[in-house]
Length: 379
Ligand SMILES: *[C@@H]1O[C@H](CO)[C@@H](O)[C@H](O)[C@H]1NC(C)=O
Image (tube, rainbow, N blue to C red; front, side):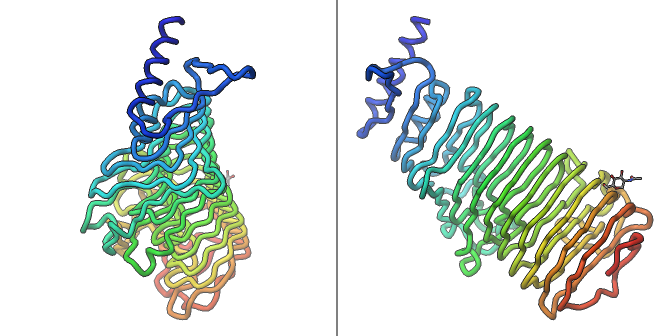
C-alpha cells in the first residue's frame, strides 16, 4: 500500500511538472488534505491533457477532460478504465488533423459513466477531411468514438459536432445505455460529409440508445449484429434512415431482438430499412419498428431487401439471411413524389412471420418490383 501510494504521488507530480496549467487536481478530504489514493478526481486540460489522461487513467476515479486538444493521429485512449470510473467532457474537445483511421476517442471498461458537462462539445471539425467520398476513397478519415467492450455502462449528454466520418461504433458491449446524445453534422450537407453514420452497432447484447438527436449523411442507426438493441425517441435528419444491416458477410451475422420506437425521420433518403447481403448467411429475427413518423423521404419510406452486394442492391434476393418475426406497427408519413412508398424484395420463403399494421406511407410511387411479400405486408 505504502509503495503504491508513493508511486502514485510520483506519477502525479511528474504529470503536473510537464504542464503549464495544473494537470491534476486531487480530490481533498473534509479537512482539505489531499487524498492521494489510487482513485483520485483528476482534471486534464489543454494540449497535454490527452497524454496525461492516458498515462494516469488507472489512478483516477473521475477523469475530467477540460478543453482538451487531442494531438493529430492520437486516440484519446480511455480503454481499460478501472471499474466505476466516471469520464466528464468539459468545454470543447478538439482533435488535430491527420489522415488516419482513428478512432479519435475510445472508452472501455465496466460500470463506466461517460458524460458531457453542460455546454460541452466534442468538435471533430470534419470539414478538414470531407471530400464527399466518406470511406469510399479520397482522404483517409478517422472514425470518431469507439464504445467497445463497455459493460453495465452509460454514455450520456455527449454533443458531437462535425465528425469526419462514422461517429459511434458500439461493439462487444453488454448492457450499455447511450442517452441524450447529439450528433450535429448538419454542416456536412453542403460541405461534403459522407458515411457519417451516427450509431453503428455490432456484436453487442443489451444496447439502449435513448433520445438521440442526429443530423448526418448516412444511417441514423445501423445494426449489423447483436441482441436486445433498443433505439427510442430519436430525431433523425438528413441521413439514410434507421437501418438493420447490411447483415451478412461479417464475423457475426445474427440480429435478434431490436426495438425501434417513437422516432421521427425527416429529410432523409430512407425511412426504415432492413438489408441483407446477397449470397451470405445469418439471420434477422424479432425486429420491431413501432410509432415511427416519416417526412421528406427521398428514396424509400420503408425498404426491406435481401440483395445487397458490396454496398449496393443487385436486384436479385437470396435466402441465406432470413428475416423473421418482423413487426411494423404505426409507421406513417410522407415521402417525396419521386420516392417509393414501400419496397419489399425477399427471396422465396426467406421472409416470414411478419406482423404489419398501421403502415401508411404516402406521397411517392407504388413499387412494381416487390417480390415474395409475406402475408400481411404489402407494397
Ligand atoms: C413470430 O414473431 C414473433 C415476434 O417476433 C415471435 O414472438 C414469435 O415467436 C414468432 N413465431 C414463430 C412461429 O416463429
